[in-house]
Image 1 (tube, rainbow, N blue to C red):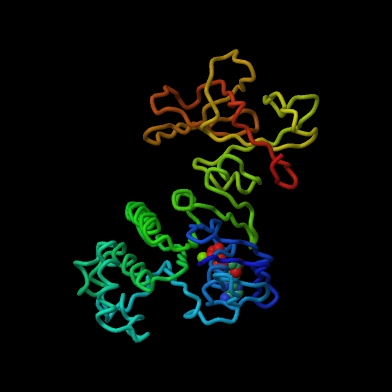
Image 2 (image 1 turned 180 degrees about the horizontal axis):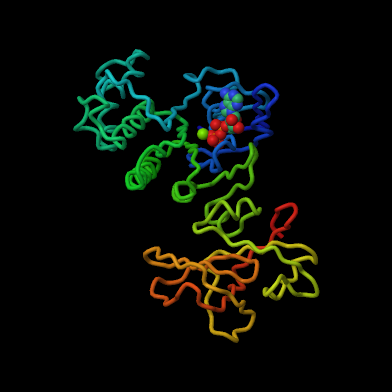
Amino acid sequence: MATVECRDLCKSYGSQEVIRNFNLSVADHEFVVFLGPSGCGKSTILRMIAGLEEISAGKLMIGGTCVNDRDPGDRGIAMVFQNYALYPHMTVRENITFALERAGVKKPDIDTRLSPVVDSLGLDVHLNRKPTELSGGQQQRVAIARAMIKTPDVFLFDEPLSNLDAKLRGHLRVEIAKLHRSLRSTSIYVTHDQLEAMTLADRIVLMNKGQIEQMGTPEEIYSRPATLFAAGFIGTPNMNFFELEASEGRLRDGALDLPAPAAVPSGKVTLGVRPGAVHLVPEGTPDAIPAMVERDEFHGESRLISLRSGAHLFTSAVPATTQIHEGESVWARFDASALHFFDTERGHRL
Ligand code: ADP
Ligand code: MG
């Protein structure tokens, strides 16, 4: 059983507290993604789980046993890093099997374990090459194979695709997903890339400044962001935000004047609307907002229209066939079923 449990994990460097009371239970076979901006503490937690970083306070359990004082090699984990760190003087085969040889595994056993791993990653034809003779994507596959062959209870990935170009990233992302489906190892994957998180995760742990902002499936976080931070971080193009004043059943600011749902209290409130929920409508449509087209970006299947209404700047995603011109006056209407309301001061969802 390979569950991972973080109980009030803390990490400080000198007087700087980087992680505060981090609590998380990862189920057996689960694929959890730590997502958040650079510097929010994702790698620090992963390295504490791996045993590469000392735990300042709290308890780390793997498979139900406290492993705070256990060496990295005795935790049943394998880690894949952003920079592959392959040995340049060794062949692909030697890079993959090195750790097993050092652990005294017999050659026939190593060969038996090697072939399914290299087959699944398409490395079988490259076994005798040196890392410099491989592309970045192939090198990263060698790094994954090196981790896989240890048949770990827990896989840890730290931004493994960040050094690759977009096409290769997409390709290896699919391979990692397939790998997890066949191996079913409990996995924790760190990334700042929301697309990777959304496509790979059973559950996303969204982090901000060393703390958990929201935990949930990709769908849960996308459709019900718990905070302004979560709403702004997840979703491309970004969600639009409007600071409004709620009173007497209306939400107002400048030319914006919308009906306020019953759950919204009077006072300052922030409305969030995804660009896909901002529709261009004919003049005279109820609750439509007058706006000016500032910019029209062609995105292939859609267009992203930047609109201005008084002091409010926002975007609308429309089908690419929509005829629109910069400088044009239009009317925009928000899809009433797709509105998100947040406490402006404290940031939580209302
Ligand atoms: P992420 O992986 O989310 O980008 P990190 O976990 O690497 O973030 O870093 C979290 C914070 O801890 C950052 O503010 C970083 O500067 C700080 N930090 C990381 N390692 C050290 C270290 N060895 N000494 C001091 N501060 C560190
Ligand atoms: Mg990092």
